[in-house]
Image (cartoon, rainbow, N blue to C red; front, side, top):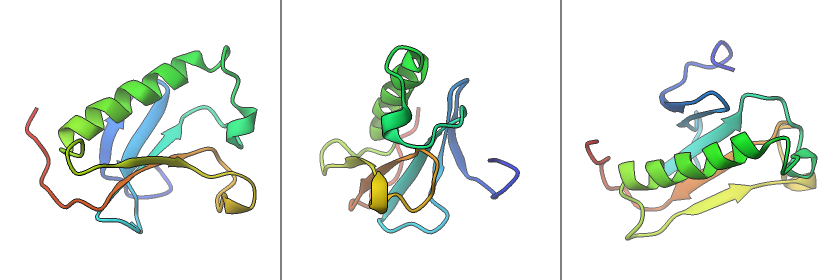
Length: 104
């Protein structure tokens, strides 16, 4: 994926890539994409993909802290079926807040 779009990477782990959405719909709009090709959430195997799932939640927690989203709120969204515009599993971490990122 990194070759397809110029990405502002927030996290790059062994199982996923997190980056700012290239055409954000919210003031904070981060995409989290598994490195393993998975078409939809229903194709995700809770056992075989447990490393990704653990990494996903740990990464979301770190981003919520880094972007200072906890107080004003955030959502983690995954779309499926007719609501999934792109045929590759991905998650949206979004918020209407506009605070600056925390320093690690």
